[in-house]
Length: 64
Image 1 (cartoon, rainbow, N blue to C red):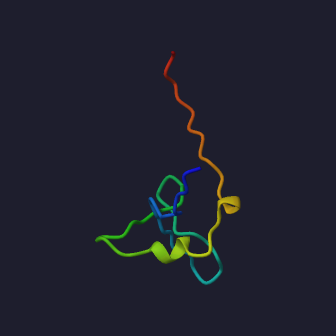
Image 2 (tube, rainbow, N blue to C red):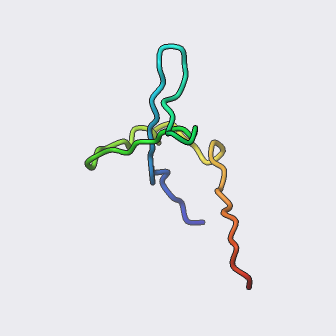
């Protein structure tokens, strides 16, 4: 069986105040941020094993 390394694909950030309240957009959704430039965040995957992961199943509107 082929083995695979666990890596970081995408990462987003949010901001919280001292009370734990997220910074929000005008519509009330959480304001999300990304890194401006390439930054090594691979350390996030260190110590993560297959049992920690759950596959993302994306719903599609496409009729087959």
